[in-house]
Image 1: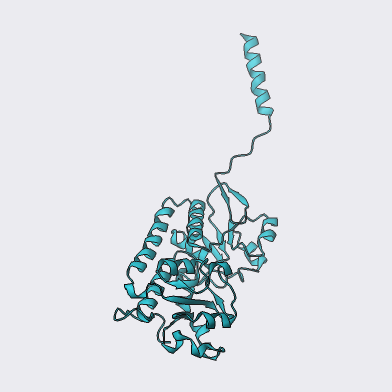
Image 2: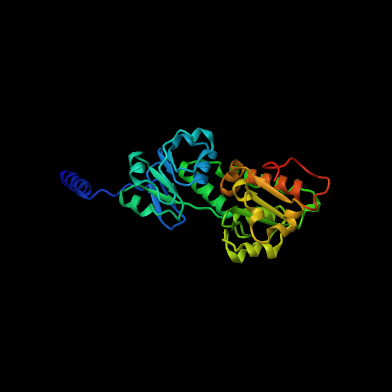
Length: 305
């Protein structure tokens, strides 16, 4: 009996002498840059360097976890008082470190990721560019925040885009549209999330997918394409008629032009939870300004051109 107890005690002591195994992280997420980040618990202090990512965190019900944002984040209003840490592409690293974040959310194009990782700060690079990308990012952030119904929230957004398409009169289908994202001119091509929304609305984007999601165009390209309808921000609208050849465009001759306010433009160009509202803005534009809309006209988005 004593021998057996001695052997058992020896085995126990040997097991206690083994090095402890590292605890398995409760959560592992692979970002769009291919990095896998492990979290022992859902992050409570989040810095966002991309407006659409901050908006997604809020849409998932966790605005209160954001402790810092980039200079362009302006929605929802509850984020207005948060510390600003510079631009998304080249933010102020010292300001971020001072906020003691559990994770930093940023675009894949940001140059800050490597420096933050070297300082031991977890980074997730997430940059949606298509409808599928918006869904993927929402589900990843939902996983990060342990939100069980992130998929339901995405389905509601997707259904709202479909409803916007169904609201349009048949006469607008096939309208050839030019959507200018910013002066340059930079356009939203067929391959972008804006282009995908236009396709779902049943209209034709004059900028083909082969040119990329948001190409910089030669203004002559738009003149040759001669769109039926133009969508621009107030900033772009100021010099349209001064562009060579643009006075001859059928869209401008026929006043088939939608000018979106700065707030509306933010909604339209951010691939996040307000994508459905962006679809409604474009649908109202088409119902009001498309040549084939006929009598089925709605309120003017962004005011008069």
